[in-house]
Image 1 (cartoon, helix red, strand yellow):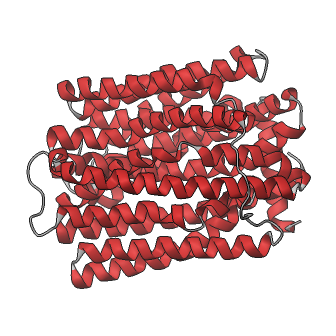
Image 2: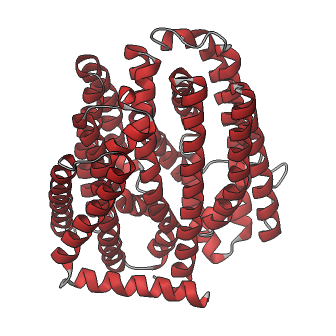
Length: 512
């Protein structure tokens, strides 16, 4: 990476990690308070509403991502007229999307009761609570969410991370206080809406100060470029796929098994998504720099960077996966008790799900940077409908186990295999795809070996509670880190990765 890309990536990573830490710890405290004070049914309702609105927000169609991709080049060239045009375009689209999502959300309200198997808390007005969630989900479309595209295209996601870190910290603390004092779930959601509004206002103020010459133009005749239309359609399918994987799991479980079972799954998914979110910070922080590099550098250079980034990221993925194998059940026992725990089999499937989805993280930055979503649309379609079909069939037959197996299967076949092959065939021109896949096999074998060793050791420990959790975590880090270090110590990848880490540290220290 060039010095500017290194600097941008470094601050994006660290601001993102701080923000992610806030959005892991504080929501965890709030979720614990809800479970303890109000009960599991309330967290089940929250998971269900979030999943429903995740489906509705498909209306955005990935247009934001397509616009950011189109902005990379004009932002690098400081073509302000072109950027103003794109910004005006996305503002108009967001206003339309907000209206569609809000209207669709209202249409779903009469059917909410049929998405819940069994009872829900009778002191709650199901429809009023859902309406508040709907408002929070759509209000950003009418405010200044579109302004964030400028920061993303300019490799400055650290600015939005810092804004959200401050606002969300205050919001979570206020929510926590109100929950303890009033035990009123409505106030919890109203405070969340206020936080969403405040974040958007601060992003607007920041972008206005940073880009004073970039403004939306009134009475501008807008036309979506044909290439953007094509890419947006493919991104819509990609978003559909991700939504089926993440949101329909909870909806299927709620419909088949009820709110308590939804809460059990949701608790494990919460931990999964928290750790996944930490790793995603690294991948997402690379996005702007990768997009810039693809615009300016050769495919040979970018292939070399891909393998280097993948090596570093896989080391983290292996350590995190091994830690999850070791610590998942001890943590859940401390947090929610045995009554709300999954079996070890399902826990291990969650860990496999985690590892497989993270295998694709760095590769996805190159798919986004090359804008090849249209070339991948059939893989999105097959994964989306394959996942939904298998969710329903296997979920009905085997419960949570079936739903997890459905997700794992579709990720391995369509997400990893098909998309990786297409990226290498289209952009890297077939260059060393076999070598890349062999790299992934090596990483997977180390992850499998370290996880198996740690699982056997940790299940034989004679103590439980906090001591078990801490000891298991230390064992996992030592075993996974040692195996990875021994396997690659004398390789060129290890040397290059070490040099890159040193460069990042020097960038942080010198602040140049």
